[in-house]
Length: 399
Image (tube, rainbow, N blue to C red):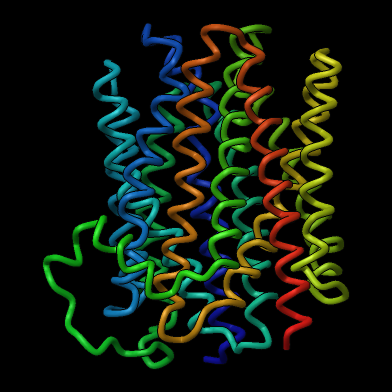
């Protein structure tokens, strides 16, 4: 089978996986309210998941160098499904946190493996385009899944979780059966994988072997913007349920609008930026736009303005993510690409930890505080972007 056909199959299965990954999001606020759990759980639960995601992503990235990446995808898809099964059955705060932490161990692995699979199996000239396609599918189908999950939530919270578990496990099996074995494209590690390598902290210490000042700045942008993104998203989802008593259907419809606009922007603006501009500089326009939308939201606090800003922010976010991921992949080598992308996923999770946790805790003090945190985080990330562009220009001038 031709490489293009294999990649197309990968994308098709990825559509189902990413849709399923979002089935539970619109019903989580309802689960918390119906089961009488503390309102901070909407942020704490995601923070718990992101913590284990953060800790284990580098390990999964390292493991991808030793075994076929599609096997890592299978293991992590099944583990993710089990974690969501625990979460969906939760009746206490402890069960919620436990289920989310268990799922987080494997979500870090599966998303790291997706990036590594694309990098390993793509021709260098097509790597940026294929990563953009992958992230586009993840964002668009994630939003579609949000919409479908909202519809499922009308039937029951449990129905949404059952569907999610079945599809996550099923797509994991399909990835393993139908996708390419990327072993032949990978650099073979000189030493065998040891029990010590399973320690997530040792994987972080290994980052010194590939870390550069420019990669550090990219990772800092990813992590800090992740704080803002997750603070905004987690707050907004609960905010419209708590403050306006809107059902999961509204959450789903908003995500459906994001899916459509994300698809349009990724197939036009994002592709144009990748082909016609130097993304190491032009990405700043995306940062400006997202920061401006958060400032507008804080200035005009009407529900309609909040919804419009949410749709625009996350549609533009679907452009930012593949560009930053491509910028990261440009600074990898065949020897370290698996580890670098694992570390990238950890930085994404690190932002998620603090964004979701702080959003959950400060929301109880003032419902607007998470929005303020989101705006502040993007201001800082944009300032780091200035530093990156300045150093990049010096880097180019020196060559």
